[in-house]
Length: 277
Image 1 (tube, one colour):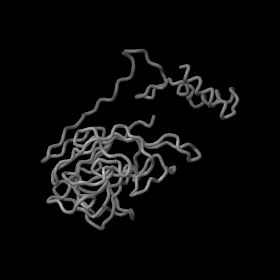
Image 2 (cartoon, rainbow, N blue to C red):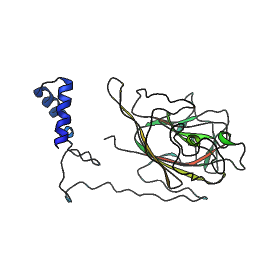
Image 3 (cartoon, one colour):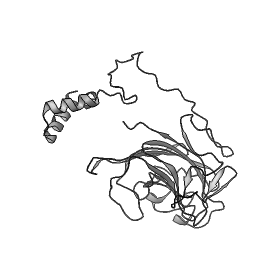
Image 4 (cartoon, helix red, strand yellow):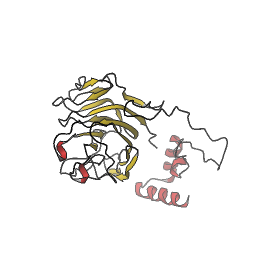
Protein backbone atom coordinates (compact mmCIF):
# COMPACT_ATOMS: atom_id res chain seq x y z
CA UNK A 1 0.00 0.00 0.00
CA UNK A 2 2.85 2.39 0.82
CA UNK A 3 4.42 1.73 -2.55
CA UNK A 4 1.08 2.37 -4.25
CA UNK A 5 0.75 5.73 -2.47
CA UNK A 6 4.26 6.71 -3.57
CA UNK A 7 3.47 5.82 -7.18
CA UNK A 8 0.25 7.81 -7.13
CA UNK A 9 2.01 10.76 -5.49
CA UNK A 10 4.66 10.77 -8.21
CA UNK A 11 1.92 10.66 -10.83
CA UNK A 12 0.16 13.66 -9.26
CA UNK A 13 3.44 15.60 -9.33
CA UNK A 14 4.27 14.69 -12.93
CA UNK A 15 0.81 15.61 -14.15
CA UNK A 16 0.82 18.85 -12.15
CA UNK A 17 -2.81 18.36 -11.18
CA UNK A 18 -4.52 19.64 -8.07
CA UNK A 19 -5.54 17.04 -5.54
CA UNK A 20 -9.16 18.16 -5.74
CA UNK A 21 -9.19 17.72 -9.52
CA UNK A 22 -7.57 14.29 -9.35
CA UNK A 23 -9.94 13.00 -6.66
CA UNK A 24 -12.91 14.27 -8.66
CA UNK A 25 -11.63 12.56 -11.81
CA UNK A 26 -10.91 9.24 -10.09
CA UNK A 27 -14.18 9.21 -8.16
CA UNK A 28 -16.21 9.95 -11.29
CA UNK A 29 -14.68 7.00 -13.08
CA UNK A 30 -14.47 4.69 -10.10
CA UNK A 31 -10.68 4.62 -10.47
CA UNK A 32 -9.46 5.59 -7.02
CA UNK A 33 -9.50 1.93 -5.93
CA UNK A 34 -7.39 0.94 -8.91
CA UNK A 35 -4.85 3.66 -8.18
CA UNK A 36 -4.22 2.16 -4.77
CA UNK A 37 -4.10 -1.44 -6.00
CA UNK A 38 -7.51 -2.49 -4.75
CA UNK A 39 -8.59 -4.26 -7.94
CA UNK A 40 -8.67 -8.03 -7.84
CA UNK A 41 -6.40 -9.45 -10.55
CA UNK A 42 -8.89 -11.99 -11.90
CA UNK A 43 -12.32 -10.49 -11.38
CA UNK A 44 -11.49 -6.75 -11.71
CA UNK A 45 -13.59 -6.27 -8.60
CA UNK A 46 -13.20 -2.97 -6.76
CA UNK A 47 -13.54 -4.69 -3.40
CA UNK A 48 -10.52 -5.90 -1.44
CA UNK A 49 -11.53 -9.41 -0.43
CA UNK A 50 -10.49 -11.09 2.79
CA UNK A 51 -8.43 -14.27 2.56
CA UNK A 52 -10.72 -17.29 2.01
CA UNK A 53 -13.80 -15.08 1.76
CA UNK A 54 -16.67 -17.39 0.79
CA UNK A 55 -18.59 -14.42 -0.59
CA UNK A 56 -15.92 -13.71 -3.20
CA UNK A 57 -17.33 -14.24 -6.74
CA UNK A 58 -16.79 -17.73 -8.08
CA UNK A 59 -14.87 -18.20 -11.35
CA UNK A 60 -17.08 -19.04 -14.35
CA UNK A 61 -17.60 -22.74 -14.94
CA UNK A 62 -16.52 -23.98 -18.37
CA UNK A 63 -16.08 -27.29 -20.17
CA UNK A 64 -12.28 -27.59 -20.60
CA UNK A 65 -12.60 -29.61 -23.78
CA UNK A 66 -10.32 -32.53 -24.61
CA UNK A 67 -6.81 -33.24 -25.88
CA UNK A 68 -6.00 -34.05 -29.48
CA UNK A 69 -4.54 -37.25 -30.88
CA UNK A 70 -2.77 -37.73 -34.19
CA UNK A 71 -6.02 -39.05 -35.66
CA UNK A 72 -8.51 -36.71 -34.04
CA UNK A 73 -8.42 -33.04 -33.00
CA UNK A 74 -9.50 -32.32 -29.45
CA UNK A 75 -12.58 -30.40 -28.39
CA UNK A 76 -11.94 -26.69 -27.60
CA UNK A 77 -12.89 -25.19 -24.23
CA UNK A 78 -16.50 -24.07 -24.14
CA UNK A 79 -15.53 -20.39 -23.79
CA UNK A 80 -13.12 -20.41 -26.77
CA UNK A 81 -13.65 -18.66 -30.09
CA UNK A 82 -13.24 -21.38 -32.71
CA UNK A 83 -11.29 -19.99 -35.67
CA UNK A 84 -11.09 -23.22 -37.68
CA UNK A 85 -13.17 -26.31 -36.99
CA UNK A 86 -12.12 -28.30 -40.04
CA UNK A 87 -15.09 -27.37 -42.19
CA UNK A 88 -14.53 -24.04 -43.91
CA UNK A 89 -12.55 -20.78 -43.96
CA UNK A 90 -15.46 -18.48 -43.11
CA UNK A 91 -13.45 -16.91 -40.26
CA UNK A 92 -10.52 -16.11 -42.56
CA UNK A 93 -9.75 -13.65 -45.36
CA UNK A 94 -6.82 -12.89 -47.64
CA UNK A 95 -4.86 -9.64 -47.91
CA UNK A 96 -7.48 -8.19 -50.26
CA UNK A 97 -10.24 -8.83 -47.72
CA UNK A 98 -11.69 -11.65 -49.80
CA UNK A 99 -12.40 -15.24 -48.79
CA UNK A 100 -9.14 -17.05 -48.02
CA UNK A 101 -8.03 -19.34 -50.84
CA UNK A 102 -6.19 -22.04 -48.93
CA UNK A 103 -7.23 -25.66 -49.42
CA UNK A 104 -9.65 -27.31 -46.98
CA UNK A 105 -9.90 -31.09 -46.89
CA UNK A 106 -10.19 -33.95 -44.39
CA UNK A 107 -10.59 -31.59 -41.45
CA UNK A 108 -7.58 -29.36 -42.04
CA UNK A 109 -6.59 -26.30 -44.02
CA UNK A 110 -3.45 -26.28 -46.17
CA UNK A 111 -1.32 -23.45 -47.49
CA UNK A 112 -1.70 -23.01 -51.24
CA UNK A 113 1.50 -21.47 -52.56
CA UNK A 114 1.05 -17.97 -53.93
CA UNK A 115 -2.42 -17.36 -52.49
CA UNK A 116 -0.96 -15.26 -49.67
CA UNK A 117 -1.14 -14.98 -45.92
CA UNK A 118 -4.57 -15.47 -44.34
CA UNK A 119 -5.98 -13.40 -41.48
CA UNK A 120 -8.89 -13.75 -39.09
CA UNK A 121 -11.84 -11.49 -39.74
CA UNK A 122 -11.87 -10.58 -36.05
CA UNK A 123 -9.15 -8.82 -34.12
CA UNK A 124 -7.66 -10.06 -30.85
CA UNK A 125 -5.37 -8.68 -28.14
CA UNK A 126 -4.46 -10.49 -24.92
CA UNK A 127 -5.23 -14.14 -25.52
CA UNK A 128 -4.63 -17.85 -25.12
CA UNK A 129 -4.16 -19.35 -28.57
CA UNK A 130 -4.17 -23.00 -29.59
CA UNK A 131 -2.93 -24.01 -33.05
CA UNK A 132 -2.18 -27.44 -34.47
CA UNK A 133 0.01 -27.82 -37.56
CA UNK A 134 1.88 -30.41 -39.60
CA UNK A 135 4.88 -29.99 -41.88
CA UNK A 136 4.79 -31.61 -45.34
CA UNK A 137 5.84 -35.24 -45.61
CA UNK A 138 8.13 -36.36 -47.11
CA UNK A 139 10.38 -33.45 -46.18
CA UNK A 140 11.86 -31.28 -48.92
CA UNK A 141 14.64 -28.73 -48.65
CA UNK A 142 16.93 -27.74 -45.81
CA UNK A 143 16.96 -25.06 -43.14
CA UNK A 144 14.35 -22.35 -43.71
CA UNK A 145 13.18 -24.03 -46.91
CA UNK A 146 11.58 -26.97 -45.11
CA UNK A 147 7.97 -26.70 -43.97
CA UNK A 148 8.08 -22.96 -43.39
CA UNK A 149 5.09 -20.93 -42.21
CA UNK A 150 4.30 -18.78 -39.20
CA UNK A 151 1.69 -17.81 -36.63
CA UNK A 152 1.51 -14.03 -36.21
CA UNK A 153 -0.18 -12.67 -33.10
CA UNK A 154 -1.87 -9.38 -34.07
CA UNK A 155 -0.32 -9.89 -37.51
CA UNK A 156 2.97 -8.56 -36.11
CA UNK A 157 4.53 -10.96 -33.62
CA UNK A 158 5.55 -14.29 -35.15
CA UNK A 159 5.95 -17.70 -33.62
CA UNK A 160 7.83 -19.61 -36.29
CA UNK A 161 6.39 -22.73 -37.92
CA UNK A 162 9.12 -24.90 -39.45
CA UNK A 163 10.04 -28.54 -39.88
CA UNK A 164 12.77 -28.55 -37.23
CA UNK A 165 13.00 -32.33 -36.92
CA UNK A 166 16.64 -33.12 -37.71
CA UNK A 167 16.86 -29.90 -39.67
CA UNK A 168 19.51 -27.38 -38.59
CA UNK A 169 18.89 -23.66 -39.01
CA UNK A 170 19.54 -20.49 -37.02
CA UNK A 171 18.07 -21.05 -33.52
CA UNK A 172 15.88 -17.92 -33.49
CA UNK A 173 14.24 -19.15 -36.68
CA UNK A 174 13.44 -22.75 -35.80
CA UNK A 175 10.04 -24.09 -34.82
CA UNK A 176 8.50 -22.36 -31.78
CA UNK A 177 10.95 -19.44 -31.86
CA UNK A 178 9.81 -15.85 -31.57
CA UNK A 179 11.21 -15.19 -35.02
CA UNK A 180 14.49 -13.30 -34.93
CA UNK A 181 14.29 -12.74 -31.17
CA UNK A 182 14.05 -15.83 -28.96
CA UNK A 183 14.95 -19.45 -29.75
CA UNK A 184 12.79 -22.04 -27.99
CA UNK A 185 14.18 -23.42 -24.73
CA UNK A 186 14.20 -26.90 -26.31
CA UNK A 187 13.49 -28.42 -29.71
CA UNK A 188 10.28 -30.40 -29.14
CA UNK A 189 9.56 -31.02 -32.83
CA UNK A 190 7.86 -34.12 -34.13
CA UNK A 191 8.72 -35.64 -37.53
CA UNK A 192 7.14 -34.14 -40.66
CA UNK A 193 3.60 -35.29 -41.33
CA UNK A 194 2.75 -35.61 -37.63
CA UNK A 195 0.44 -33.13 -35.94
CA UNK A 196 2.10 -30.66 -33.58
CA UNK A 197 0.56 -28.11 -31.23
CA UNK A 198 1.29 -24.60 -30.05
CA UNK A 199 -0.35 -23.22 -26.93
CA UNK A 200 0.51 -19.55 -26.65
CA UNK A 201 -0.26 -17.01 -23.92
CA UNK A 202 0.13 -13.52 -25.35
CA UNK A 203 -0.13 -10.12 -23.72
CA UNK A 204 -0.11 -7.29 -26.20
CA UNK A 205 2.05 -4.18 -25.83
CA UNK A 206 0.58 -1.09 -24.19
CA UNK A 207 0.99 2.45 -25.46
CA UNK A 208 0.09 5.77 -23.89
CA UNK A 209 -2.08 8.43 -25.51
CA UNK A 210 0.94 9.84 -27.34
CA UNK A 211 1.88 6.47 -28.84
CA UNK A 212 4.82 5.91 -26.50
CA UNK A 213 5.48 2.33 -25.41
CA UNK A 214 4.41 1.78 -21.81
CA UNK A 215 4.77 -2.01 -21.62
CA UNK A 216 6.25 -4.44 -24.18
CA UNK A 217 4.43 -7.51 -25.44
CA UNK A 218 5.08 -10.74 -23.54
CA UNK A 219 4.68 -14.33 -24.65
CA UNK A 220 4.68 -17.79 -23.12
CA UNK A 221 4.41 -20.86 -25.34
CA UNK A 222 4.26 -24.63 -25.17
CA UNK A 223 5.24 -26.77 -28.14
CA UNK A 224 3.66 -30.22 -28.01
CA UNK A 225 2.95 -29.62 -24.33
CA UNK A 226 6.54 -28.60 -23.50
CA UNK A 227 7.39 -25.10 -22.25
CA UNK A 228 9.55 -23.42 -24.91
CA UNK A 229 9.02 -19.68 -24.30
CA UNK A 230 8.83 -18.55 -20.68
CA UNK A 231 7.20 -15.11 -20.46
CA UNK A 232 9.66 -13.55 -22.91
CA UNK A 233 9.54 -9.80 -23.48
CA UNK A 234 9.37 -8.94 -27.17
CA UNK A 235 11.65 -6.21 -28.51
CA UNK A 236 9.02 -5.18 -31.06
CA UNK A 237 7.43 -6.70 -34.17
CA UNK A 238 9.30 -9.65 -35.67
CA UNK A 239 11.08 -9.41 -39.03
CA UNK A 240 13.76 -11.07 -41.17
CA UNK A 241 17.24 -9.76 -40.25
CA UNK A 242 15.72 -6.70 -38.59
CA UNK A 243 14.61 -5.56 -35.14
CA UNK A 244 11.85 -3.06 -35.88
CA UNK A 245 10.87 -0.81 -32.98
CA UNK A 246 7.37 -0.75 -31.56
CA UNK A 247 4.87 1.52 -33.23
CA UNK A 248 1.56 2.28 -31.57
CA UNK A 249 -1.30 0.15 -32.89
CA UNK A 250 -4.83 -0.86 -32.04
CA UNK A 251 -5.58 -2.99 -29.00
CA UNK A 252 -7.03 -5.75 -31.18
CA UNK A 253 -5.72 -6.91 -34.56
CA UNK A 254 -6.22 -10.06 -36.67
CA UNK A 255 -4.26 -13.25 -36.18
CA UNK A 256 -2.45 -14.26 -39.38
CA UNK A 257 -0.98 -17.48 -40.80
CA UNK A 258 1.84 -17.19 -43.30
CA UNK A 259 2.07 -18.45 -46.87
CA UNK A 260 5.81 -19.13 -47.23
CA UNK A 261 5.31 -21.40 -50.21
CA UNK A 262 5.24 -24.72 -48.37
CA UNK A 263 2.05 -26.84 -48.04
CA UNK A 264 1.89 -26.68 -44.25
CA UNK A 265 -1.37 -27.91 -42.75
CA UNK A 266 -3.37 -26.43 -39.87
CA UNK A 267 -6.29 -27.71 -37.81
CA UNK A 268 -8.12 -27.13 -34.51
CA UNK A 269 -7.42 -23.41 -34.13
CA UNK A 270 -9.13 -21.67 -31.22
CA UNK A 271 -8.52 -18.64 -29.08
CA UNK A 272 -9.63 -17.45 -25.63
CA UNK A 273 -9.66 -13.70 -25.08
CA UNK A 274 -8.05 -12.78 -21.76
CA UNK A 275 -9.04 -9.90 -19.47
CA UNK A 276 -7.27 -6.67 -20.37
CA UNK A 277 -6.65 -5.75 -16.72
